[in-house]
Image (tube, rainbow, N blue to C red):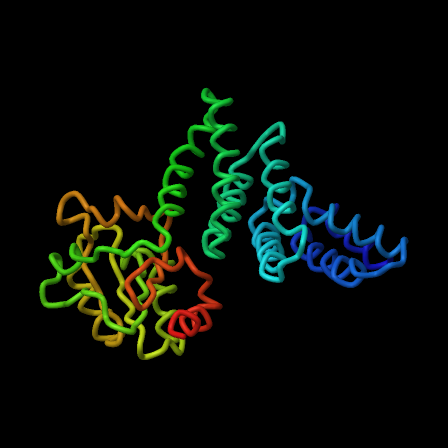
Length: 293
């Protein structure tokens, strides 16, 4: 009870919302299995505090919230799917749906695609479509429409064999035919953006397996692109660096697999099928291991 009240005070302070989620999770995980009515009630209240509240759309808190929902989904908690649907419905029913709230909704949807919970992702996509149709004059709904269109396309692409012939056309000296028995990681990035450069450097530092090919694809053309790619290719010889498909005219690859932000990852299995969109880099080694079983 003391932990619960402490967490509520943190949440009300506005500055410690993200930290409060960790404390609410302690109460929830500790007391949910209990048969004690008072403990069960505390768990229920902690659960409500995690799921509801406009402050939870703030970026730091939102990341923890999405991770908490993902964890319960992985553990096959009986109410995990309902919790996710409730959080999205709550956000859509706020008087003022702010940009942070939209980002959180789509972060949750992305998480469902990564987890391959395509049925729930499709159901919630239909719910978002209804919201957009009912608020056609709203700038919020308009901005959501394009993102939902891209997301629906990715839902439909899961398990499809990816055609990488366009990459071979751009870089004839490289062969992007499926590598038998090997997984492949496509990294969409921009050598001209510091956040992309930091990400690709950190990815190179990971102990990725030798039987996965990492292909870094420029998703934005850059005036110094050729020079920059040569520099990165020397620094990271185990990665394949490919010029921007944008320069070759209309990019079928980027049309079929829209990239909502940079950097962005697509993970292909050993048969060349799209296995995951934007997998968590922290779990990448485990996901690659699972693909190669």
